Amino acid sequence: MFVLQDATAQIKLTQDTISCPIIGFTFGTTIPSNNLSSENGMYDLYKPPYLNFGLEASYKTKTNYLFSVDGVLTIGGDNLRDRNIRLGDVYTHDASPIVAGTNGTDANVTCYNRGLTFRLGIGKIFTLNDQNPNSGIVTRLFGGFMNQKTIFFMNDVNAPQLQGDYARLYDHSRFGGILTESIGFWYMSKDYNVVNIYVAFELTQCWSHSTRDYVIDYQMGLQGPDNNKYFDLIYGLKICWMIPLKGKTAYDYHLLY
Image 1 (tube, rainbow, N blue to C red):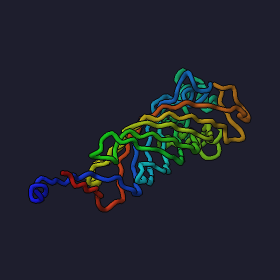
Image 2 (image 1 turned 180 degrees about the vertical axis):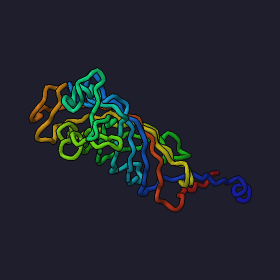
Image 3 (image 1 turned 60 degrees about the vertical axis):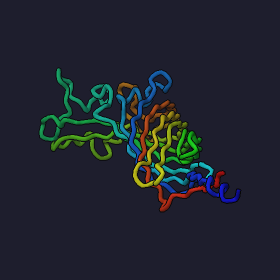
Image 4 (image 1 turned 30 degrees about the vertical axis):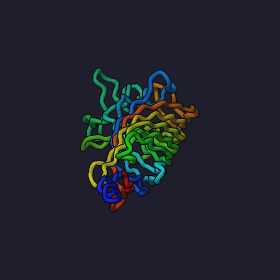
């Protein structure tokens, strides 16, 4: 009887949850809401969508909680709306207005938005498969700050009216606090070496104000301090490639009869 019992025993090998620091490289898109954001918010200033590039550092606990810090750079294309009106006398007043350079030719100015975001976050992974308990649905909450403004670029022709301190009159620099809710799918491969990604949908609320003492925007009717408070509701999709700083997979062993 003892021999028969030993012969039928089996070992069940189950992967264990791990705790480890994680470095992540993120990429995504951002689209501000038209109807739910303030007038002259990000949507009214810049044509969406915008691209996001970021770096994230997280710590994952054995109970699948996440503690994170990230930084994100947001870049739009040549997307400033109604620039001929907003910049006023910077443009010539002929049939085809241009920004005249110091040599009298078109400076070919491009105007795009750039944003910098810093956030702290907490989250939780809800396991869907016991065979891979480090993966599943992930929900997260972030809080932090964001600064965004207009950047002016031109060709080899100098246009001093949009350079140096003069550019600060027109760049709509704004700063404020943000709150982000995120839901997505978190996947860590069993060997933790190559395929470790998460994909998430994010909803961000931003409360901002101008950081400039003097603002010129003829579309907004501004030639002086901008004392307005702005609210932006922002949608985003993000994908992150993760590098867990963990050297070896952990397993639980169970003896079955």
